[in-house]
Amino acid sequence: MFREALALIERYDRIILYRHSHPDGDAMGCQLGLAQLIRDNYPEKQVFLVGDAPTRLPFLDVTFDELPDEAYKDALAIVLDCGSSHLISDERYKLAAATLRFDHHLYCEKICDLDVVDSTFESACGLVTMFAKETGLKLSPASATALYMGMVTDSGRFVFDSTTARTFELAAFLLSQPIDLNKLYYDLYAEPFEKILERADNMHKIKFTPHGAAYIYTTREELPAGAEAAPTSSGLVSLMKDIRGVFVWVNFTEGDDGVHAELRSNRYNINPIAVKYGGGGHKKASGCVVPDRETAMRLLSDLDTLAATEEA
View 1 (cartoon, rainbow, N blue to C red):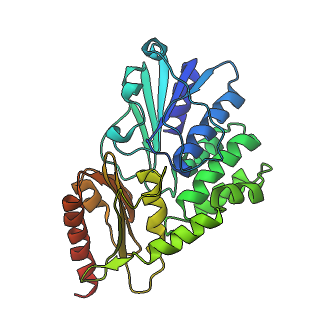
View 2: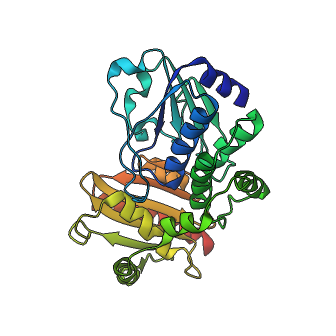
């Protein structure tokens, strides 16, 4: 399917790149990385990026394009790192003459004319990197850095069990370019001291269900001034990942659009629970947005039932 994808890219002179809203490192990495790949190899093509700002990654200097509907005529829209159509950052991808998707989430629905989907990859950036490698596209330091960012963040710095020998082979391929790893890791993980103190406060909020599922619930009133629910929720969920005896955990953060839930497990497939509540993702890392606290507690009860299987 990589050759079919390359043929689509070669066929269209205007290409518009999409990804999911509230982008993480993988979504931004493959959007920036593939855009740079196309520009490096096909400098005559017009390449546009659309979507909301990457608030989780404030160090990225990205300008997104605001396009009129007419721009989609005779254009190729590429959707990246998105398993559900309602999560795509701008639904106007449907106006394009042709559509293409690269994704590593569990397959839920056909979204584009050509869906290149493989959930065995640790990241969408890994999939795009394999595409670049197998089709012989020329890498630049800029494209390699962006793609490496997505691989390292979506694999949890290469510790999640989605990490395979192929992950390291592709990382080595990207590192054939001069990536400044010190700068990249600093940009990704260094935090102000106030944030570290805030994380410590949140660790004191961790609670447990009767069968040992861990959770944090943050109300809108508890949300720090200026903070957004989506990046806050994805940041706090990692606080519970190393608690001995906990195999299922979730973070809830109230926002203007509902309660953002980030579900994780190091043992069980929690994806069906996320899907049940309108979300999706991976077997051991999924998310959704539910309308209110009552619904969030029902989701928590489902996770508690799943955690109970450890005691059975």
